[in-house]
Amino acid sequence: MKIGQFQIYTGNGKGKTTASLGLALRASGAGMKVYFCQFIKDQEYSEIKALKLLPNVTVEQFGTGKGILTYREKEEADEACARAGYEKAKAALTSGEYDVVICDEINCALMCNLLTEADLLALADLRPEGTELIFTGRGATEALLQRADLATEMHLIKHYYQEKKLPARVGIEM
Image 1: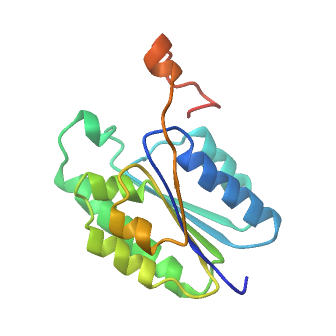
Image 2: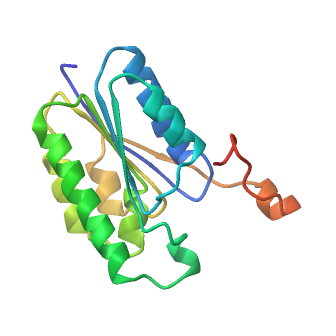
């Protein structure tokens, strides 16, 4: 790829990770090498299983497996996992090995004070010209949105979890 871009998918609506998964699928199908780094989460969700089946895709997760931080207090282990993920994403981005680097839920790591806005801006600044960089997750800051080449906000209008109390379903949300 000659010209890579910096993309952000944020907002309170569903579909941020799904958008990045679509990019990973498309890039893999085109023979590109993809690094998919997932922050905060540490479970073998269906999308992780599927990504591991794709050629040219490397998947790593950096979460404690203790659940979503909005429902519990953060711990030192959460910060250590986020920092480790940040360092691995930085290494992948600067290695020259990957055409696409996806930092899934990195905006949430920022929102939960596991990483700083300066960390994320510095990571974006390291993007080589020919590498596509994608950040996902709620809570992208105005500075990040301004730095991005493409920024999409997923806006929640209605969700069956709230309306019908329908829990996450395997193959659809997890």
